[in-house]
Amino acid sequence: MFRLIICLFCTLAGASLFAGEKPELTRLADADYTIRGKAQAEIATWATHFPAEAKKELLRTYLDSSEPEIRVRLIALLERAYFPPKGYLGVVMRADFLDRFGRFPPQPPGQPLVGIGVRVITVAPGTPAEASGVKMGDVILQINDWEVKGGEEITSSVASQIQKHSPRSPISLKIRRDDKVIDLKLQLGILPVPSERARSLFASDEMKRFLLPKELTLQIREFRSWLAEQIEKDQENLIADRR
Image (cartoon, rainbow, N blue to C red; front, side, top):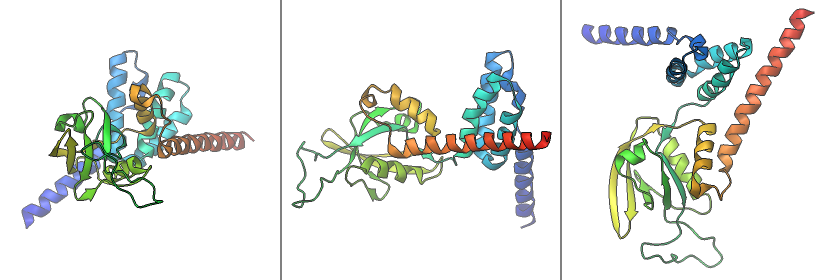
C-alpha cells in the first residue's frame, strides 16, 4: 500500500512538472527552419495534453507578438489547444447504399434509402487506418458493436462514432472487401484540427467534387470567430489602458 502511494505521488509530481515545463515559444521564430518545425511539434504535443494552459499562453503570445512567423504558427497551435483531442482513424468516406452483390437493399415504400455501410475512398498515409490494413474501396460495416446504418448523414454518424473515443483507444472494425468480411483491430490516433482536415480533403482528388462536411465548416467558423473576438477584446483593453 505504501509503495502504491509513493508511485501515485511520483506520477502526479511528474505530471505537474511536465505541465509547468511548457516549451519555449520564441523558438517558433528561430532562424533555423528545422528548429522552428521541431518547436511547433513540441508545442502541439504540449497543447494536446494541457489545452487549457496552452490556450491561455498561446493566445497571450499571439496578441503580444509582432513576428509574422510566430503569429502564423501560433494560429495553428491555438486551434490545437481550442479543440479537445478525439480519436482518429484516417480515412475519407462516402455513403454506400449497395449490398454485397451490388444491389440496392429493400426499403419500405416512401422511406429514404438507408445505407448499410460507408465506403473508404481515401486512406491517409501514416494513419491508424493504413497501419491496420484498411484499403481504398473497403466498406466499413461495424465499429465495435455499433452497426453502420443510416441515410445521407451516415458518414457524419460514423465520424462521430469514431471521435467519441479518446486517442489511443483500441477499436475493432468489421469491413467488407469484395466478397469477404474481415475483422480488423487498431488503436486510434489523434484527430487533426479542422483546418488540417479541410486541407487534406481539398487535396484529395475524390473530394474535389464535394463540399466540406457541414460540421467541419462550422468548427472552422467557430474557431475563427473565437480568435477574432479575443483580438477585439485585446484592442479594446489596449485603448482603455491608454486613456
